[in-house]
Image (cartoon, rainbow, N blue to C red; front, side, top):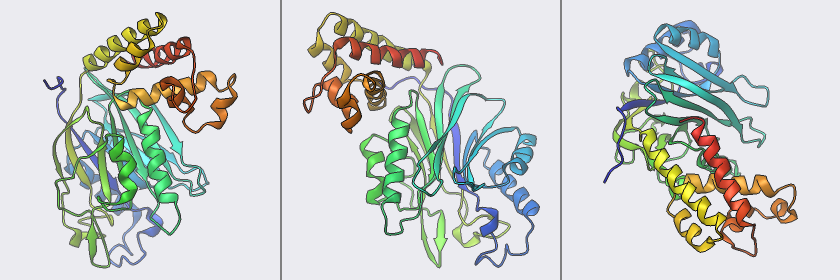
Length: 345
């Protein structure tokens, strides 16, 4: 039986072309002012009537945010951490959602790049979800593309609520670099679409994505527009926007999981580890990963193995690879997760 869902929401991911690149090999945009192109970008986004937008290659955020506010959207933004203004932003309909929190997650690989996260709540209180916007480095013969995608997945998997990842990943849908996302259970909303969002010297492809956790249903997905119109005032970026219509699980689903987790804590407090592990195995991967992270945080100051083992939290919780912790620590890690989730429900 499918989980009950909320009303559909429309998500857009859009690389809007950073202003200082707008004139490079783009003769139509060469003499277009930023203000004119900004207004066209805003019109393009609003024409899709999205509920939430993840933007990449964002500069002059205040200029965009002012115009988007007039259209009914609230914006959040973070630049890179290497001094560059370029960054990522998230916009959401002010009358439909409220922000719980937001934060940048920097890759710290010398590029300044990041995954920018906002946790949102529907105004009716029925659903809480996370949206990430990220711009992954183009593969350049080093391992930064692979590491940035893997870091994005690991960060997203620690988040408590249903999660959507918007971004320009600079790779095709069948790229091996996307494997960490697929293995973790994230689904490509556009996997059945043959449309392309980007064109370089006549070679078009889709390098833009909207990924969603398994508890989010994909109703439809599209890449509106034609790559032949890229870098013109009709399509004022070198990427087309991509859009997906999704339904979110209701908060009641999270409460059901909370009930299961309290049962696991009871088993642990009664030293019924085998039974607790069997129940824990049925929880979503993103919850398990959060609990593993909590085990590490609880043990890192008192357990020398925690600092040296790359997967200490997971292995210690599951009694693998000669790692172990007490049932009290396991129970505390789950309780810590529950406390963080129930504060937002």
